[in-house]
Length: 130
Image (tube, rainbow, N blue to C red; front, side, top):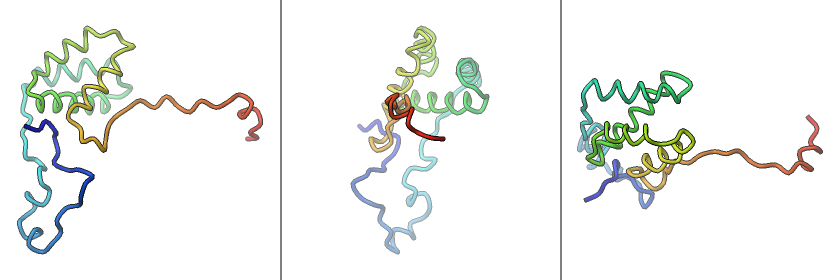
């Protein structure tokens, strides 16, 4: 049983022959809208309210809550259980846990990470003219 949310890989391209294109849009876009991630409004609201504390905008909180909910449901886990674990985490460790959690069901060619910025040597920085 695969826990990946997509059938896409980097090993080969899609079959674009005339017969495969004639099979219809649902088969061409192999799993677009194939899985229903329905949950209660209370669960959705709880996740959004939690991420509104951490995200700079409501849109960012909505998107992050949606990604967490989809990942939890893809893993057959209750999103409220994941939310309880998030609440128990210290604020500084939440980013690392979120990255690990969201990478569980991602295709290996699109793994998430944290951009810490490039460390520039002070001698090099000092010689750059702006």
